[in-house]
Length: 517
Image (cartoon, rainbow, N blue to C red; front, side, top):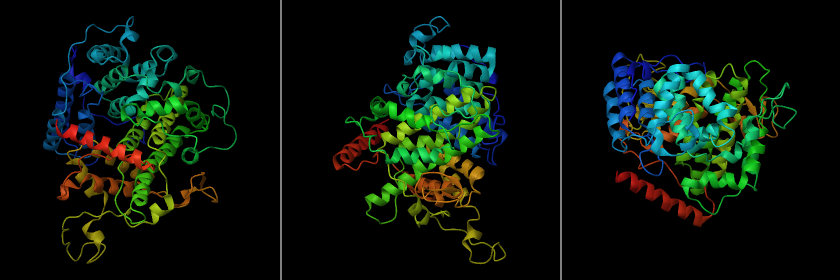
C-alpha cells in the first residue's frame, strides 16, 4: 500500500503520446470518461497487488481501463470493467522493509516488496521524471550487469512489465510508469540467457548495427521465416506454461540470440527506428493471426472456419503497440533504442518457438472467405434510407466501417485482454492499412520489400482487420448477442497428439480456475 500518494501527480489527465506511431484516441473520450478513468487508476494503485495470485498472474485492471477509455467507452463501462477486474485481485500489503539505493538489488524478484518498490520509484520519478528514470533503471549497465538484470526482468512475464510501463509512456501517466518499473523489480529474470552482459556493450561506430550480420537489410519477416523453418528449435519435454519460455531459452538461447542479431538496424538512417517498429508489427500480427488461422484449417482438414486465438501470441500483438511510445522516451539514446528493439525481438521469437513454431500459410489466409477483410455484425442490421450511400441494398450502407462493430464489441466484452488487442490492431490499421499486396516480396518474388517469408507478396493492409475480425468472433461478439468465450485459446500448436491432449487438459484447468474466482 503506497505511502506517498499524490493523485494529481501520479494519475493526471492522459496527454498526447511521444510518437506518431503510437495508437490514437477514438471519439468518445469525454470529461466524464476521463474522471472515471482517473478514479479507477488511483483506486487500483492504492488497493491491489500487481499479482492477483501466488503464481504471478498479472493485474490487468489499469490496462483494460486505459484501453477502453482510449476507444471511447462511456464512464459506466469503465467503472463496470474495473468492478469486474476487482473480483480477481489480491490486496496490496506493506513490504517487510523500504527499498533504497543500497538494498535495491537485494529483494529483486520478491513480490513481497511490490509496495516498497512502488514507493522507491515514486520518489525517483518525482525527482528525475519519466524518461530519465526509465532509461537509467532499464537500460544502463549499472542496472543490468550483475544481479539487477533489469532489462531481462522488463521483458519477462510475457512482457507484462513492458506493457504496463508502455501505457504510462504513451499517455504520460507517471503512476503507470512507476507501477511498471516496480512490476519489473518483482519479476524473475526469466530470459537472461538471451540478454547476456555482452548485450549491453556500447554500439560500435559503424554505419549499420547488425551484431554480426553484414550485407543487405534483413527484415523481421525474414527472421520469422527462418525460425519457422529451423527444425533444430524443438520443444522441451516439459510443457508447463509457467516455465515454457524459460525452458525454450535454456535449450536454444544461442540460436535465438543468433536470429535476433541478424536483424539489421542502421541508426544512421533517418526514420530507421520507425521502420523497425513497422517491421516487427507486421511480424507479430502475422505470427498471431496467420498462424491462428492456418492451424485451425489444418485441424479441420481443409474446411474453412474457426481460429486459434492463442493467449500468449495475442500478448505480442498488444505489446508491440507500446514500442513507439517507449522508444520515444529514449529518443536521445540510440543505444537504448536498439537494446529495446533487439531484446524485444529475441523475446518474441522465444514465444513463437515456445508455441511450437506454428505454420504460416499467408497466401491461403488472404484468399480465404473466413479471414475476411469486411467482417460483418451478426445481429439484424438497420435498413438505411434509400438515399444512403453507396446505394440502395448495399451492405456498405448498413456497415460503412467494419471496424466500428469490432471496437464496440471489444469495449463491452468481459474479457480484459480483448479491447487491448483490438485497440492495437485498429491502430496499426490506421498506420499501415494503405499497404497494397506486393508491398513485400517472398523468397521468389520481385519488387517490394524483400523477405524470405513464403506468400509475403499477398500481405496487405487488410491484415489487421482480418485478424481483428477473427479474434472478436472467436472471443464472442457480446455486444451483438453472442455469449463470451470461456477464455483465450491455450492449446498451443502441437502436432503430436499426446502433447495436444496435454495442452487441452491444461487449458481446461485454467478455465475452471478462473471460473472459481
